[in-house]
Image (cartoon, rainbow, N blue to C red):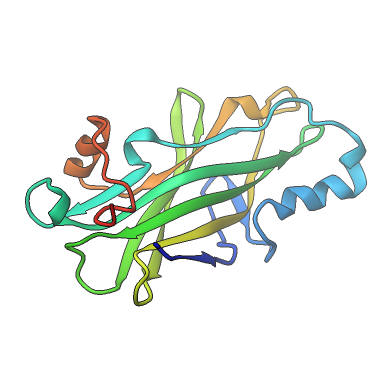
Length: 201
């Protein structure tokens, strides 16, 4: 039987140049939920929330120690799910929360039981430009006998200014992924897959 240990990480604070992000010390998606409970919450959002998703070419990370073979797989990671809630009224900014479910794996060629990964969060004007991108490190330790670790990463309150009351969340995207080498990006783009359970099947 393969053991799986689940971890949860506290909210990060994310500060973006033209996007103010304030860590509220709340659990993932709780900021938007809190906003929904008070004051102007009786008024519906005037439009949809920004779409939040993982970029296909950057949603997986596979480390190889040598050629691309099963026996050479080191540490791996995969973003399994991205969740986001938002709230905005009138001409006020969009408040969004972000929660990522990530699985980390330790393959047969991994060195040691601790690895540091990096993932990014980018806010974009849809199909136009990246407004800002920030990178977050995450260190994972695999206990003895455990080669798969799952955790949830949470970004607090992402505040996206709007030009006016007619600017809806549909104009923006929140994109996440791992920081990868060109070789790792090409590996993902080709549709090749060594999942986090590499070396265990």
